[in-house]
Length: 633
Ligand code: COA
Ligand code: AMP
Image (cartoon, rainbow, N blue to C red; front, side):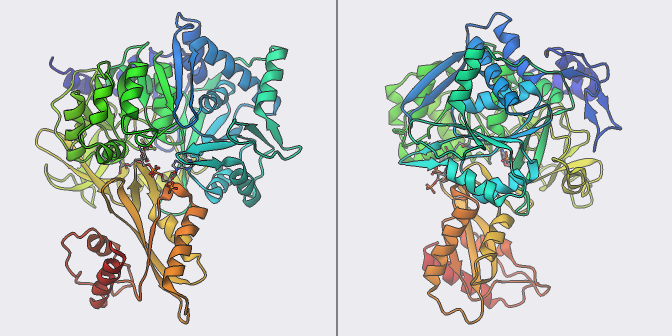
């Protein structure tokens, strides 16, 4: 089949407003948009500025009342808890409306923020949708973050309420959430009024009188009372959620998502990009704490009337490297979306994919990869073992949906390993030099997107229009800076090669080395430090910290290194996967005092490196090499 991609992309380019007006017809509006885009509003313009709607209505009620009430909306499968459940659209709507009524009783009103700090259980999805139902703004914080990171987010979002569960379950250990949350609230300046806590059978958490409420009892009481909250009318431009993501400092960026544009864009992608029909089972093996989880575990599949899957487990070890194949067979999954690191983990454990023989994956039509660069080896391996197209696609927390991909629904374009293929309608992607001049095909440059960004992308950062403008729009006037570098080939295919800032990507998780450096620098014995991302076979990148001790510190360096590893785990969380710190005498710097992180990275990666002309003392690079060799890096 030939692809309709070029025709559809061309139609968008010739009349973007007509394109999005057409896409907007797929959504139930309370007040349909008369105006499609207002260039004078917001930081760079706003989509559907005069429309009103409710996202929860479109995700649940529309299907529950529209003939899909008895269809499965959500499947929960947890090998770590030994639990499986399914909810129809009618049931998911009922539970969500009841939870929304509980939130209202606890004082949550339209526009209030609610932090959701929960593991991968259906109640996390209900929590997000219940907020959407009453116009509250959810902010989900990933369970692998520590108390301090949670506190930073509490201070920025100023939530009225925090929704949590007693624990998460990681293979071999229970992660107690409540002590982390209590500590975060202790550390924060903005104390939430209340906490709604779901006790899981694996862990009974202590409650603080007057502040903490028991989820199950309040839900039971609401059921007895017949309480149920209706969907409220919100402006299409009202915020649906804030999702914090790593910036270049320790202060994360609160990416704002609005209601109207978000629905229009996500709904469009389900059919045209992912090739999914309503009623089919779509599985994003990610976590609701990440953007992939927001968009493709929660919102897009439900907006489309598909069946979504909440998987509380890992690709390997829960119980084995056949976990994904079991899921596909058992739930009839037609498309799987995950990060390349998950496939690297499976490949490492089961290089011949012997577990596949035990299952039938015949329902699977496509594997989608995103979150980090999909290395050609992993893509080729996945294609070979599964026998379906493996579609890499590139996006960011900021965009909320795919920038560059291969549109399965419009007809797949030929796949080139190493490239996520072509820009989606909505995105005019350009490769430029420092002076914003386009570079030739095949030449590396900064990847930028011509403004305006399409519906669904961030209109701003939470409470900080100027940080939005400064971080993304100032460097290349008229364009959004993706902070990724790459090139375009003669066929118009894009190649995304890496970040231009100090963000690293560890197992598909985005982390700031600047944030880690702040933690290292807080150790009392540390005078100076630098953190880089070194190549890692499994996780893509792994953080590596160098520290120089203060003069006169006579302690065993190995002890200090251990303390530093523990400090990052304590301050940022296990998700940082910070396992290696190296005490060195000095850090290599330029004559103007800039730390040569790039050269240190090349040394750590065993790549070819040369001594930069601007270096102050070339001998230091040898010292770094020796220190790493001693550590076995
Ligand atoms: N709550 C608490 N701790 C968590 C957590 C959570 N929700 N998620 C991860 N952690 C912990 C892990 O237990 C691990 O702790 P450890 O240092 O004690 O082993 C640490 O954080 C690092 O986690 P991770 O980087 O995920 O490594 P892992 O070894 O547990 O698993 C993979 C590696 C590849 C299997 C896993 O990262 C994975 O499945 N990734 C692909 C899917 C994905 O999540 N993509 C993200 C965006 S699409
Ligand atoms: P996040 O905001 O956590 O989704 O991380 C976004 C970053 O991950 C991007 O800016 C890229 O650096 C990287 N990334 C995501 N998907 C891809 C991909 N398909 N190919 C290359 N890099 C990717």
